[in-house]
Image (tube, rainbow, N blue to C red; front, side):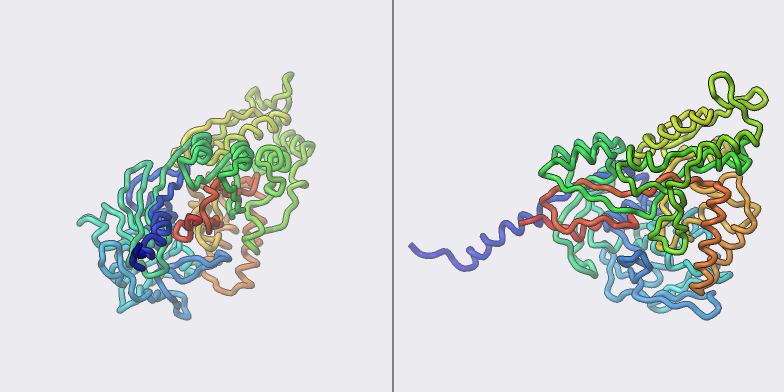
Length: 508
């Protein structure tokens, strides 16, 4: 009997590999796709590796080359030049040029976002370089250009009025279909400038309910499921078909305070609420991670911004009661506080996209009742916190704030607090709170490049925020994921810029 041709044998041997490459990947996370504009949904397109930024980050979270291979700044700090990587093409086949990149950044600058604090006067193309001119020196500019709202899209991604009408990026995957608010399908882009991904197609599905996400991981309907509640993590950890992953993030569970509210305008009231929190109990009992207790805003991974405060020393019920008594609050017959016949009663808004938040909010409700403070917890949409900030109706708002939103926490702080002492604050930061010193320190930080000076100012900023408490820390945050055990190469990006799907492969 004649042997089959060698080419046929080789083809048969390669069939399993081809089948693995064709096996789709299903990613599930809580975050909806609100449209195709990077200003609102850029994080999804960045995480799914569809579009990229001029600046990337390295393993330590520092700015690193992205679509820009290098950059430099003039001695006066007013002109930055970003040299583009050679040989990059968009998903429609058009080349990445300085003109295209500059135009994309102009579109980003025209919308509210991460570039707002940067004193940009012009964005220009000069040969193969993008030139950004500033009114005053701004040291964290490269870090801001790593943010997903600054994704670089092809010229044909925009209509004649500058609106984004389709996502045409440069990433290892191209958008096949975008179906807001829930689904994105991507496929491998064969002309990618970097290493080709092993998995050919992938999907992203936004699923808001944590219980549903956990069931999808358990049933095999999803291969990578992000953001799991503690109870689901414990259950899924016993599942042989899944691998559980967790990674500490530069993200902190906090609540922001309306410092103009009559009950909260005095710093002593805010400190009393903080002193009444059993952070260690919340971390160990609810979050199931004793190391998560946070007595300050910035985790150790943020270097000079971290003060090293002990969460065990952050609770002092007796001192909390003393501070409230100084403000004229007295317990009634039910043990609840009153002043001039009015109760100490507040509403805290939060959301369930991050499933830990309602649990922590309910714990605060119980713990504050012990000092006579009545708290109503309102669980709604994440958008209700910034909208409440803007219309003045917010009293307290709980969130998990990412201080590594860009590779320098200063970018987030400029957004949350600002450098204008007459107009401080932000949707996810201070509300009704002013501090001339803090505004001045942040203004200096955004201009100075000397690392010793920056470290000193970072510590001063951290201490002042800890003293005045316009935003109160409760716990460090961990990103969690349940992953199909047949996947290899999975890791969690601690800056949450990427789901790293281009690094995954199916085991043979």
